[in-house]
Image (tube, rainbow, N blue to C red; front, top):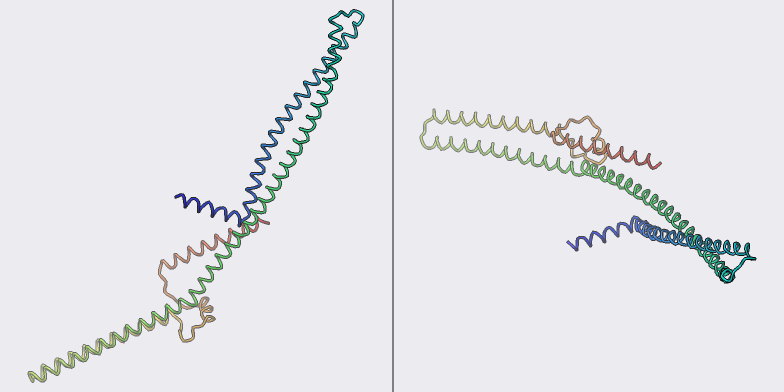
Length: 296
């Protein structure tokens, strides 16, 4: 079972390599990786925006408090002086933190834009490759259908031009052998009747009985010969009706015979098979025409 699965896997990979679907599979994997990268980049972008917003709010709050202290500078206390000094010192750090957050935000936004552009380009490339692959498969199926139709037509011509004459010759040969056997049996019956008459003449010497036996044997022999002649005539006529002359049987004559008015004898199953083959050929032709119209 494992060997079967591995063989099927190897066969599917070889088929994908031949049809060009391996490149589409690699594009699918690349698109999945790029989607994951874009998702992580967007998460980093949200974090950078939150950090930048926090840095702005921190610096704004510090500046607002400094302005309030400057407005009541004439009423400062020792605590207000210490607070002003601490805020003035932290303002530079807040400014640097805000600039750093802004730079990180710009960098993450650029990465997110590049990731989105690469993802869009990969999706378009995959769509283009899939279109090319589908067109290739459609062309292969169309040519395969035409190839099967050509093989069917070739087999039909081979059977009509090569196999059918051979089969007819074999049937005629078998018919001739049967006729010869029937004639030989008739001759044997005539010889047997003559020997019986001779034995009666030699043994008993009864002339009336001998004459009666001779007449009976003669009538029997004549009846057998007449029946054989009639059977031969029927078989010959049937053979002439069912087949053309084999002496002048050529491929051109066989092709002309396909459209002749010669009477043939068919079985019901042969007619059913011809109807089924015609229906299948019509369905295939309609499918090919529909495929060609759709491709255009």
